[in-house]
Length: 333
Image 1 (cartoon, rainbow, N blue to C red):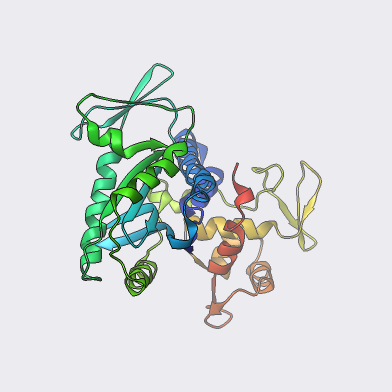
Image 2: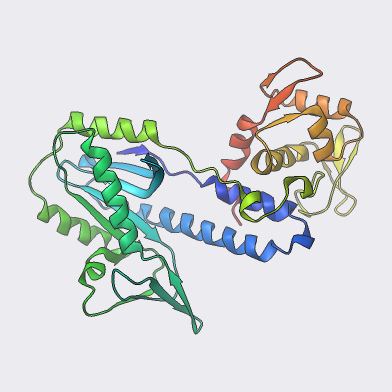
C-alpha cells in the first residue's frame, strides 16, 4: 500500500527554468546542465525500482516515497521507506554509472568512469545516518523498538560494485535492483517477531506525512545568479530560446511562424520557480517584456489566479499554475 507517492523533485523544474533564463555571460550553463542531468538521473533511478517493488508482498507493506523530516536543526530525507509489522526498511537509490569502490566506513565511495576517478559521499554511511534520525523520531511516537534496516540500491544495471575485503557492512547493504526481492526475503527471515500493531503503523505514517517538508531550493542563489539579471520575455515552446512577439492577443514566433496563445504560462512558471511565487502587474509587464501594465493585467486576469489586494496593488499567486505545469513528467528531456 502506497501512503505517499513519489513526485518529481521541484529542483528539476527549477534547473530547467534556470537553464533557459541564465545569461550566457555568467558562464554557468554547463554547471547547471550537469546538475540537471544528475537530478533527472536520480529520479529515474528511483522510478525504475517500482518494477521490483511489485514483487514484494504487497498486502503487509506500507510505502512512503520521498519523505523529508526535520530532526533537531537538520532535515533527513529518505528515497523510499517500507514499513512492515516486523521491521522498517530504508532504501537509498543510486543511479550512478561506472565502477564503484567501497574502501571503508571512513572513506568516500570512489567512482571510476572513462578512466576518471571521482569521490562521492559514502552512501552506506548516509543510510546509517538516516536510520539514526528515523529511530530517534520514532522513539517519541511509539513505545515499541522496531528494527530499522537500510539498503543502498544501485539502479544502473551496468554499474560494477567492488568492496575491500574488510568492508563487510557495505557488501551486505549495497545491492543491485535485481537483488532487492531476495534481500527483502532475507530480512524477513531475520525479523520474525511482530512488533508494530496497526495503530502504531498508522501513527508513524500520519506523523511522517504531516511533518514532511518538500525541499524548495533557491537555485539562483546556488549558482550565484542575480534574479534581476535573468533573461526576460516569453520563449517559443518549439524554438525554446526564441523570444515571442505579443500581437493581436497572441504570441508570435518570427522563426517558426506560429502563434502560441498560452506561451506566457510557461514564462510565469519560470518567474515563480526562480524569483517569487507571487507577481504584480508591474513585475509581470517587466518579466514578459510587455508594453503596458494593461496587457499584463488582462493576461493575469485571464488565468483566474487567486490574488490579494485591489487592482492597483493586486498580487497574483502562481502556485496553482506551477502545480499544473510542473506535474507534467513529459517535460523531462
